[in-house]
Length: 113
Image (cartoon, rainbow, N blue to C red):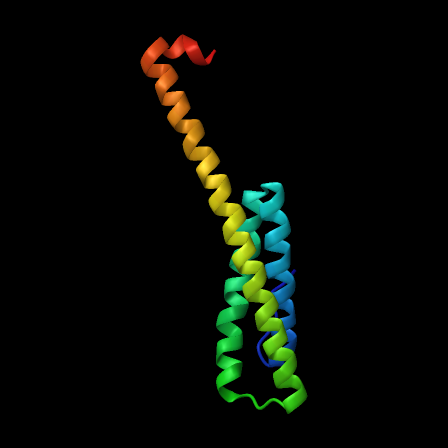
């Protein structure tokens, strides 16, 4: 997905895109697609910076403000769950490294063959 050009899209449209990217990150975290997550997060980070500038200048209707709040809640929920998946994966990786070090220490490099 190409980055959205400032001025071409509304604040709400950018929040919708950030929300979709956040939900994509969650799906990628669940499948362990770490490299893809980096690409998506870079796009998302640029959009977050873009929407910050628009939020300072923009005026939303009451309905749009409600939609914005809903989108932000979805973004935060996806981010929280993504963080949980990433943290769990990091623990597994750390435990794997600890086991590997113990094997190397006990049996030498041939233990991992």
